[in-house]
Every structure is written in C-alpha cells, then in structure tokens.
Length: 360
Image 1 (tube, rainbow, N blue to C red):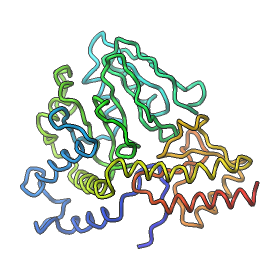
Image 2 (image 1 turned 60 degrees about the vertical axis):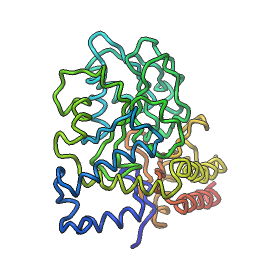
Image 3 (image 1 turned 30 degrees about the horizontal axis):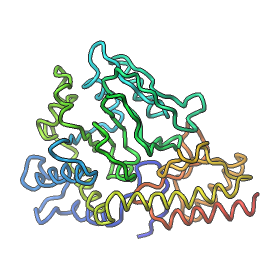
Image 4 (image 1 turned 30 degrees about the vertical axis):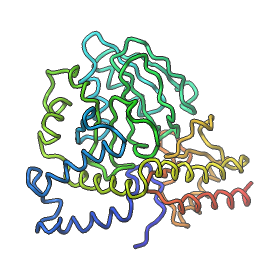
C-alpha cells in the first residue's frame, strides 16, 4: 500500500489500522456471513456496535453517561446549524453566537431563520485572522462557537465564560484533538469526517437536562428529544460510518487517549509553524496571533502567486496532496488531523526550509 501525505481539509485521513479492520468488515462482519454494509440496524449484530460507539464517545471525552446523552445523526454539521436553534431557541428568546469564520457565519445565518441572534464576538473586520473577544449578552438561551476554524486556521484553546448560558460548540474539526475540559460544554456536535471517521455520521453530545427545555413540536427527525429517546434508531442510522467511528475511538484509546493525541498534534503543528516563521521573506502564516493558530488547519501564503504554484508543484512531486487553501481565501492550508503522521509534518517542514533557502 502506497499512501501519500494527504493534507486535505476533509475528509481527513484515517488510521491505517482502522482502514484495515474496516476493509475486512466490508467483506464479512465478525463471522455473520454478511458485510457491515448489509447488517440490519435493528439486528443482533449491529446493536452492540451502535451502543459501543455511543459509550465510547462519552468515555473518550471524559463525560458522564449519567449527565450526557448521544445522538448519532446524518446531515453533517451543517444540518446542526439549523437544528440547534430549532430545538433551543424559542419565541422571543436570543442566542449568542461567535463569528470567527465562515462556518460560524453559516451557523448564525441558520439561527436567524428561527429567532434573534446576538453577536457575542466577531473577527470579520480583520478577515478572521484572529479569534475575537467574546462578550456574552447575559440573556441568551445558549452561546454557540466553532472550536476550530478550518478555512481561516484559528482554534479556541480556552473556552469562554457565558454568563450562565449553556455553551454549545461545533467541534467538527478538532474533536478528540485538544485536551480540554469537555464538561464545560453543554452540547458538542461534530461531523466525523475530519477526526473521527468517514463522512456520513454526525454526533451530538448533549447534557440530558437540556432536553427538558427543548422545543416539543418539531418533526421527529429534527427533534433531539426524539433522537435521544429512540437511541438514534428512529430511522436507519448510518451504520458503516458509526462502525468506523467506534474503531477510531478505540484507536484513540490505544494511542493514549485525547491527552496523548493532543500532545502529538501540538508537536506536529509546531514543526510546520517553526519552519514558516523562520522564512518570513517567502512564507507568511495567515493567523496574526500565534496563540490563536490552529493545530488542525495551518493556513499560510507565499510572497507571490508564482511561488505558491511552484511550491505546490514540488510538494505534489514529493507525495504531498491537498495543500491548496479554501477557494474563498486562497493561499495554502495543511490539514493535519489526529491520524495524520508526524513524518508528513516533518516532510512538509523540510520542504518549506529547502524552498525558502532557494527562493528567499
């Protein structure tokens, strides 16, 4: 197997051991005579897969099963942009939102379809090159933020005060990759396809007490109450992505848990940032405040478009792919999610150093 260094922003790479086990299950799952792709979502073969994934989500984040519950859903994190306010933003109520990048802005747009939004902080004026100061309204039903901004390259390492409002987070692109106190969050949601599995499953982890204040008159597919009451089996769940999610969570445990993965993520990011910072005549990181730089999505530019094109050509020749920045902002972006190997970061750092020596 010849694997390249895939710096794509998503779907992100999966651990090889997870891919190997999943590939066997595609042919036959645990002696069942069926592929994992063929299992009934209400049969004896799938039941433990489903339950284990929910249990592992909580235990991996250090959350109590007595306080939190899990919904395994489809539709990606973008669907949750709408479902959150539909469930928790009632008539006449206000929600606080942090505008720190494109995904936060999209979440705000969906919330405004439902009710009032107070912008508790925004860095739009500086083109999202840093995280904003967060000032809660003091009267919000909840405060929502994006923990890692994949397009702009910023990341939240210290969770904000909310003045009593429940704290909701889109953690799609740094879940399991930062050692934070997840019990400070009342609701966490994430599409799996960057750090936790393939595209197709989105998990919502929420404090059980929230269900008491959730809106009741919603279509069942949109209701967190229904999804949780039915153990995410109201309709057919995304069986294969949930299975791979469970395998990935077991891999995280084998690696030493979130603390060990986070330490490695910080090390990986430092390799690349140090190389960029050492060559300011050629490379410029896009995030102005070093403390706000993402460990997951490292955004940078070169001095000219011609240099960017030449750098990408050399990277491609060395087996590095996925480095062009998002189409809305340009530049370059190295996405180094949890399963991305240290060796790939070393290779990119070496290319940065060599390229700068020749072009600077």
